[in-house]
Image 1: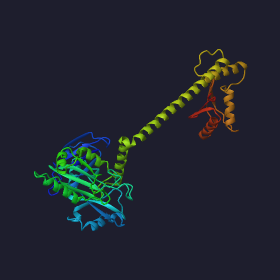
Image 2: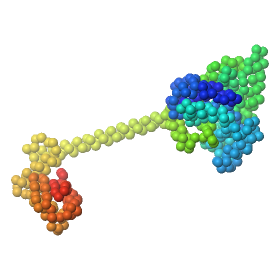
Image 3: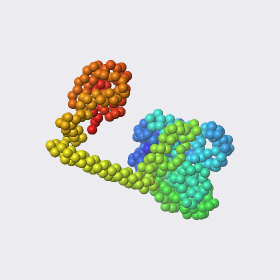
Image 4: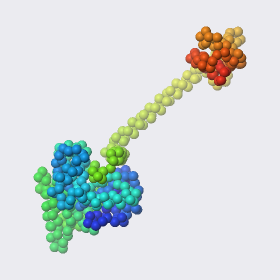
Length: 435
């Protein structure tokens, strides 16, 4: 998985093809393998490319969707959000929260379509087409809230209403992004010599992201995270401790969410989305700590099956060897003159034929026995061969006064009776049944 975000995301100027990306690569979706910053043409190649949009590029709106057909959903969103947005709705891109459907209250992500499409075209032109688009921050979901869609993101699910703050750098400036059940805000971290800048930043954060009515006024359960590059500034401005989370780790966390802003006219095909979900699910099953017991259980099950199969094969092999030993013992007890046993059934049949010949009895390989088998298989028809070539245990009969179909029927009858019969041209070869 290749996770990347634009290093310069100004929406006021056209995006150059040489624009830089901050990127991180992960082989299993759980750990970072490599990080860097480069142009699109120099990015590592990967079959799954996730584009993470910076917080300030996406606005969030809570709307109650009417029950409309999926083909009219985009038009319904334009009508609902037209009065809330400053830009023309035709120039904006909309995306619903995971599992959002008509007839529900859902979060809608909005960003500039031309700006987003330009980044997608740059990556596609460089041979790194984007497979998924995710936000870097999104509204939180209360774990106790009634959520109709089972696919809603739970990456930041909390047991109580709270706010997650992330101090990060964007284009040389420090910003504090905040997400809660009320939405997402982003405010600059300003530092002044007199200290007034810090108070202004706190006031701006409180104004943009007021405490939830269900949360403590002091926001004691808020989570404060910061990129190492801006952590010192954030702690000075806001006067609190921040937990360090580097940008690559934050990008990885974003890629693990269920969000995908590639919807409507920017959406992928159904098969592509299904393939992404399957790859993501397999990657999580293969590497996520939560699935470790299942992986160990599957490995134990496979191990037990292999041990069981080997034990069964050993038992069957032992039984077969015991039967073979019994057959060899029977041969040598019945015919003591046989000292070397190579194929006990064949050798026993050969010794039995010798006894029958010595006693004047017919054996199954004698000519009279073969002719009797032909007469019995012919069912009263006069199938007589014109020439006979017989050796002990094998007879070849040719010059038949019968059609080819009749001879093939005779061959099938002999085979059903256990004889070895082979028809070649006008010659029928007959041998005694296999031992």
